[in-house]
Image 1 (cartoon, rainbow, N blue to C red):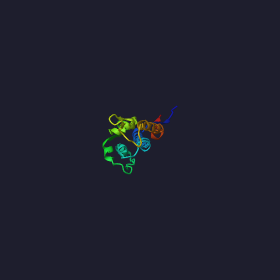
Image 2 (image 1 turned 90 degrees about the vertical axis):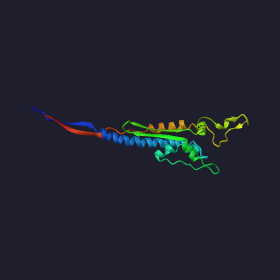
Image 3 (image 1 turned 45 degrees about the vertical axis):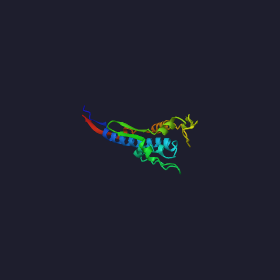
Length: 173
C-alpha cells in the first residue's frame, strides 16, 4: 500500500515581519515622545521667557510636536537661550533593534527648578531670595514624563506572527 500525503509547512517571512515591526515601533516611539512631551512641557514647565520650554525643541522637532514658544507680555524672549541649552537623541534603528529617545538640558534655572523651589535660595548679603519666580519648582517633570512614557509603552501591542506565515506544500509519497 502506498500513501501520498500533502503537508502544509509554515515558514515565517522574517523580512516582512521586520519591516512591519520597524514601522510600528518607529510610530510608537514618536507617539511615546509626544506623550512624554505633553506630560512634561504642556502640563508642568511654565511659560515666561520660554527659555525652559525651548530646551525641548530638539526633541519636539523629531516628532512634529508644536511647542508654545511665545513669552508672556513684558517678558524677555529667550527662545534661543533655551534651544542652545537643550539636546535630544533619536534612535529608530531596525538593524540594531534599538528604539529610543532622550532629552537633556544644561539650562541652570530649569535644572534647579526640576528639584527645588528656587525662591527659597536666600542671598546672605541682602537676605532676599535670589529668584522671584511666578511658578517655582520643584517641577519633577522627569518623573512625570517617565510615567507618561511607561503608561503609553505598556499599551503597545506588537504584531502577531500569523500574518507573516507563508505555507508551502510538501508532497510525501
